[in-house]
Length: 149
Image 1 (cartoon, helix red, strand yellow):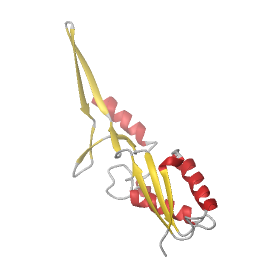
Image 2 (cartoon, helix red, strand yellow; image 1 turned 90 degrees about the horizontal axis):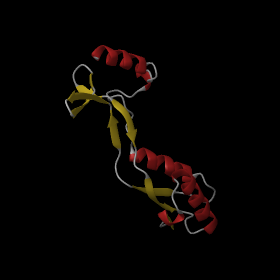
Image 3 (cartoon, rainbow, N blue to C red; image 1 turned 135 degrees about the vertical axis):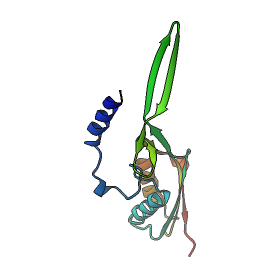
Image 4 (spheres, rainbow, N blue to C red; image 1 turned 45 degrees about the vertical axis):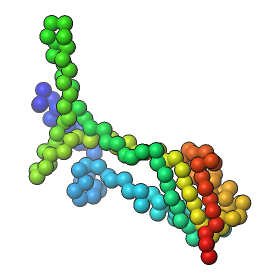
């Protein structure tokens, strides 16, 4: 059974990015950063004509969730079936980590934008349409205001 899992992991590694493209000490995952997302969104919104200087706040419906690989076994003992589940562990030299299958990020539930052009109805509409398209949220979940001078 362990040999089969070893072969499976070797085969799966063919589809994983080379180490040179992954950040150091990343435990085989790229970390999500709310600050990076806010910075990208602020940069994107500020490129809309008439927006000017921009500040953004994003709300989420929870936190990120890691989904790890499980090794499941079943043993039949008469009429009873015993199911065991344990995480697959990868030995990375100095530490052991679970085999991460995927990371599920939280859904964006609201966005607040404060910008120089926040009082202009055309600018508000452009920002609203952009945010609705990016995050699949309703207009009720978007707030756009004028920035103080």
